[in-house]
Length: 220
Length: 150
Image 1 (spheres, rainbow over the protein chains, first blue to last red):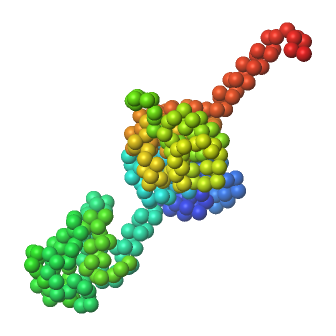
Image 2 (image 1 turned 90 degrees about the vertical axis):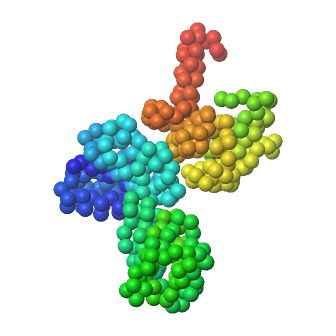
Image 3 (image 1 turned 180 degrees about the vertical axis):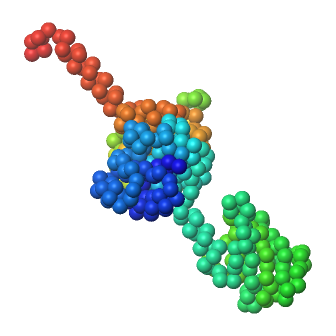
């Protein structure tokens, strides 16, 4: 597989090392001469010096033979153009842009460019994992469109002793089942929550954090 | 372009540098309603005292800033920052997401103009325009009789 990576030294270097270990052929485009020299010295990849959003430079990198192009520069506008050029001009089947501003993930998608935001991925991971130790992210469906999470309710939680209809869970979140001392319960609105309940909750990403905060009482 | 009773258009200009501010001043003087966006408030000093439009401080690359500038209500959007790629991106956002009927982007690099047209963005390249005017002037002075102009 032929991969083109456009970006700054640090990210490019580690990605490149990973790709080479998988046996891919890697071409790097970088606009700083000194970084290009270091890359050429440190990895077994073709290094092209220049602006990755310039069609001539992509030509030099043999973009028409690439299977994948990754645009991971620190500038969203450059990443957009690199991927659009890769797709429309060089017919590269797979393009992926990294967006620095998480809001641009949506913008890129509407413009037909697949994009991911490291900021969003990291914050999602923090929300789902490290912030709450009694929370296990069981699995997600459709690349994170639906999350299924298990929470062990602390006795100090503000929702203990309240019925489900009173705790004000956000729309689009659902407590699917409760394990109470190994007894499974399929709850309804009148079910009271108790300390040490193991709650299985289904959430959408936009209300995941809020739903968990209500159950744990955490203010993060 | 949809015409209004008094031909007054809503125009959003991203980038209030020399070109953006000159355009904003002239269009505002013609009675159009203007909103200029720039992430450096100092560049609003380029606007004339008669400029009667709005100023939005922020990065036009951020969708929330385009929303703040009411881009989706605009009749015309002009991308005139000093970065060609930013112009291309915000022009596409204005056209395809905010659905502005008329979008123009300034491109400084003549080689990039072809790329922009591939992305179906209408462009103006000041470099090409200047070179054409210069060529005309040169040709004109060369065809004159020697000494005529002295």
